[in-house]
Image: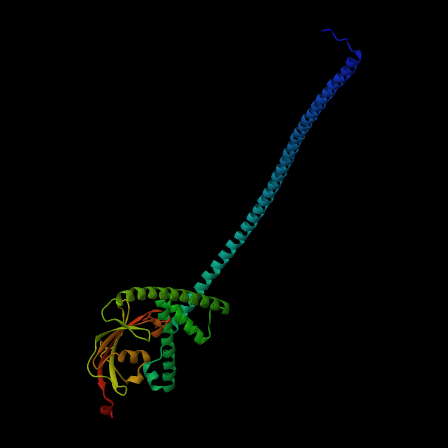
Length: 345
């Protein structure tokens, strides 16, 4: 086989193309490297910017915290100054108050001394009216009777206040009545008004306490009472137990004699007609509705015990010193006798 002759034209064409391809590849590689470098450079720039931004934020936070601290310190200083001013004002007011209290105490002491002297003088100058003169003079007798009525009313109020925990000095109380009659009043209208308001307030407070005490007593008592055999309720609002029915029906026209015992739920006796050897005789319609209702459960000579709530008895006011405010009452009613209407004619 013969060797082919060297073709210079063919090699001259292929060599530049090969170089061109290699050059293109180098250019492409450089382009890729350049892009990667740019990306890394951009990333580094972003990281650097982030670091700078973080530093700026930290600096801002520091400045803000510093400003807040300064504001708080300023507020604390202002508050401290306010407290100091308030303390100075309070000390000044306390000093004035102490001076006023001392002055008021002196005035009260002087007033009490003057009141004591006036009471002693009023009692010392009291001149009783001779009994014979009183009995023989109708005008004096009427005046004396009117004074007794007023005095009894005053003592009723005095006892009622005592039962409500207000133990007033009896001498001062009587001196006040005497001074009111004689027109020689030791206190100013303002002082009298203030004292009466304080007295009424104390009485009202004690009355409310008594009412609560009586309500609790009634609750406990009725809880046991309702369990007893034979206890029933009436539509009028009270509970009752018939101790003895009696014999012989009662007519509305009959005259009915009753004997009543009245007690508080703690056993305190308010009144007992049996012990006083008394009875009350009225036609059925003459009795209060409560007693009419109780009598309607009985026959002649019957006996009933019934527990009455305060609204059917003495209410929230009670009765003088005998019945506390808001007290429930236990009545024991016995029919002593029944007189037929025909026999009464």
